[in-house]
Image (cartoon, one colour):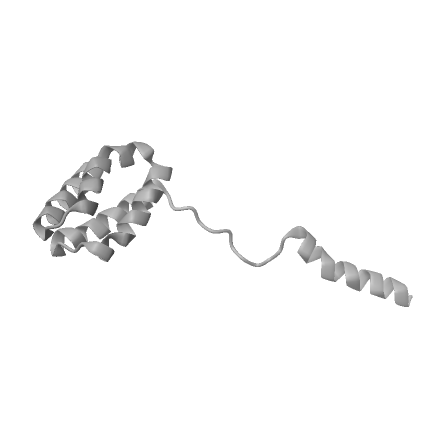
Length: 105
């Protein structure tokens, strides 16, 4: 009887591990619409402030994700995006950011 109890207890402990009940949700993969929305909101900050340098790091990661999720949209704005990343003047960054927002519509 004792060995049966040990066997059943062991199964009860191992079964959740074997079935993958980790309790963690699977990571969400962002949709292209969510990525475009994120890019637009970050570009709006550039339009408003002319911010450059390390302030554009968020755009880099968003653009890389856009290339994976919606390569046609990324290709459509890639030239202006690259120019934005290299722009030295706040006014140039503002103009390029506004153009990219319009092109993503």
